[in-house]
Amino acid sequence: MTQPVTGSTAKVLLTAERDQPRYYGHLWVFDTNVAEVLGTPAPGDLVDVYTHRKRFLGRGLYNPHSKIRVRLLTFQEEPVDEAFFAARLRAAAALRRTVTPHANACRLVHGESDLLPGLVVDRFADVAVMQTLGYGMDVRKELLGDVLTQEAGVKSVYLRNDAKSRALEGLPLSKGFLRGEGPTTVHIHEGKAQFTVDIAEGQKTGWFCDQRENRLAAAVYAKGKRVLEAFCHTGAFGMQAALAGAQSVEGLDVSAAAVALAQAHAEQNRVASICTYRQADAFDELRVLERNQQRYDVVILDPPAFARSKKAVPHALAGYKDVNLRGLRLLQPGGVLVSCSCSQPVTDDEFWKMLQSAARDAQRQIRLLEQRGQGPDHPVLAGMPETRYLKCLIVQVL
Image 1 (cartoon, rainbow, N blue to C red):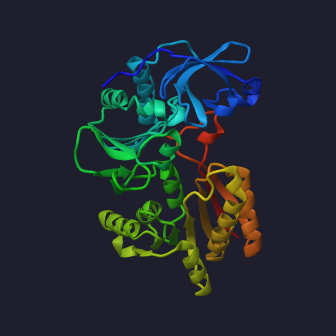
Image 2 (tube, rainbow, N blue to C red):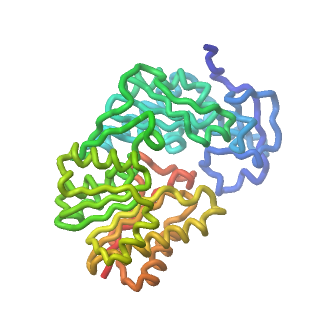
Image 3 (cartoon, rainbow, N blue to C red):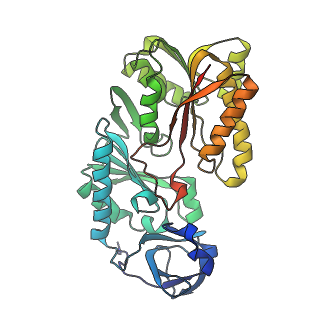
């Protein structure tokens, strides 16, 4: 295999508009920000980026086929070689050892937040699941696989390059072991809870590490309570609730495979006697439960993303309001609602105002107990609001 060039192959000159303060620290250069390209860089090549005043801005990975024309790796004139990536991955691994001491699953590399745009790595025990979502990272996947085994101490690296977003980069879809081999199911733990991760067929990389701390926070309110977990996926919120002493846990998900794994998790954690899971469309089933006058002490709502762009936000907020309205109506007085959104374009303020509106329509008074977000293994880069996406509100119905 031909090794990627470690030095710059061309210069990219930016428009004056890209020099505005709102772009400070942002690692993406959009096609509309490019005034001129001096040279003929190939997809994935390193390029040097200059402001409209001809001042060096940074060095990054180029893709002429993407709206994100350059993904900046550094603001220094330095070689981007194996040592560069080793240092970045070493720093990422050190942070995760600090912030996830009670779990053996974490987001090891959170793309831009770890100054490695276009790269996502989740660690499950001694297996790393890697996604190269940018062209430049994809042509370096062999190098990255080697560095991961050296710096993170994993025994194998599995590629989950089946994300649809790769098509926007002109990249094919694929998956399979890049380094090492072994089963595609991995056993992990989050505190006392035990789970099985399907790295080949599970959603995204196989597991949602970003909700780990929120699952534990929600479990605090579950002791002795009746818990409903809508959009339960594989039952992670419910498992923590059950292990915290919930009276009962009821889970709903539209996926038969997810429901089967949730039930398996209940058996694995020896709480199957108090957990019930069934396949159902949560939107419809919440209405059925309301009509049947079912009541719960804790309702957990963790739906999939409703908005991928700003244009979709109004429709997404309507969807969030509908499910939260139903959830609030199912709660006993004094009950707790745990409401989540992983739609990055929906802001914290918009989500909170939506929940307040749902409470008014449900004729319920609520008070905010906790305002939470993604776990610390999914850090937020100050210059890139795109890296902050998860919202989790815990409210009490009065």
